[in-house]
Image 1 (tube, helix red, strand yellow):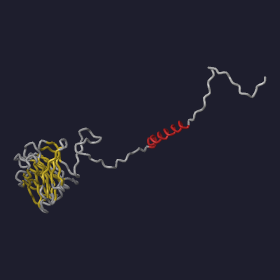
Image 2: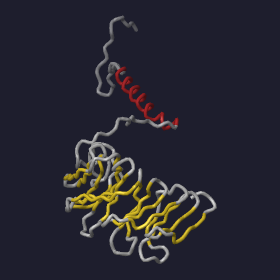
Image 3: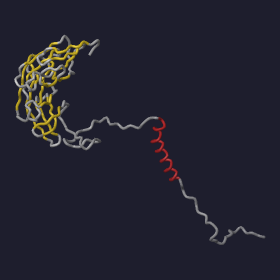
Image 4: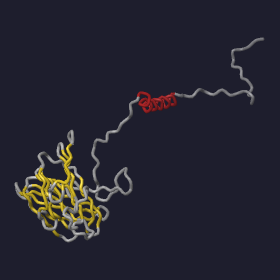
Length: 268
């Protein structure tokens, strides 16, 4: 049988599959390779033990008073202050908030973060004003007064009381170049608050907050620690103060006498 070189055409049949030209798959391969590299980038730290980290070295900026703190509970608010200050919580003038001393301005501020209200009072010009405050209801009127210490001169210091509710400033002076507030109590049994403080690091001073008179002093042979306790420990009429130096624990009465002296074998 003779077959010519001419193209032989077959009859079309619905049962015969039609041939299709091959498509360019290079773009699909590129996509697959890209996804593979990305998966490798994210999974590699898990296999090697190294964790991806983000640089949060830039400090957070406080936008305004009363804004909700980022990442915190709904009741946590930012309160922008002009600097780094020790704050003391309390209530006064129908507000709940905190007080702090701006030592540069020589002013005490009280801020209510919810109402965004701030009141302040000027303090006398001082050689030094300490930032620590005590929050106590001195006059028993359900409003807190704030007690602080300042150096009046190089050899005279004072305990002062700021009463925002009555808009009054009271102070009681004493001899000393430095002092640390310990706390308040009824140290002489007259139902009125008194204050205890360590003066010049080595002796205890107890003052009547109403009159400024000295109720008692106690001088130790070493540096008195600032940690302490106040209460009635040996059945005394008034409150007592527990203080320590390097080797002794003292329980001091309101008039400065020792109720108990405990010697320790090591440093306290």
